[in-house]
Length: 222
Image (cartoon, rainbow, N blue to C red; front, side, top):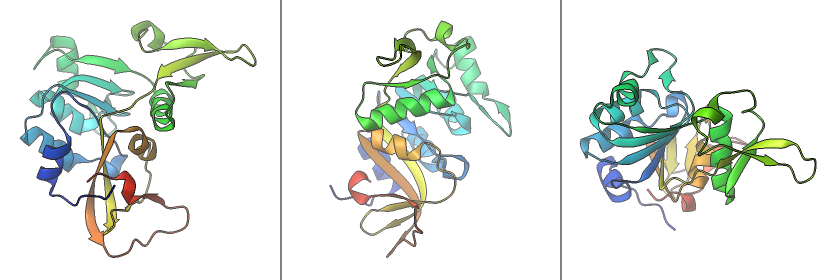
């Protein structure tokens, strides 16, 4: 599959439709704000928004009415605190009620990893002693290790319809270079059915150091 080089407007219009599961992933400098704002302009509705930390872009999308559900691990922003539109939707049903699927950071990472690996669920130990099982029993289960009998937590795999990332560069073959802390960008990219990446510049050749995070062009739809 070859990468299509599109305007932001055309990329969102072509690949994101109402009712889809959409993961706008990326850590701090790699949060795809421009893509989120374009989805707001295009008035997308009924989205299941997936992200480790919903942050301000998801708060804006929830407040404008784009989302009907959110799968996440921590709803807030380190600099500004609570997400007020997320709280309004949960506590007051404004602008409309929203369903939540809450996990820990490690749990969401395990779910993305399972989706990227083609597995039906991910496993971890980290939910023991937390209240997450009580508030999200439909999405959190226990499973016994077949080798030791140890009780582990099982979580359903995440396979978004679309993952949207932001990166610094792409080359003309569609290969994408991400610099800095990348969070679960790699796992989200591999777990999604379609990957769209916004970039700051298109270059003739990526100056990628050894062990750099490069997404191959065949994995990128636009």
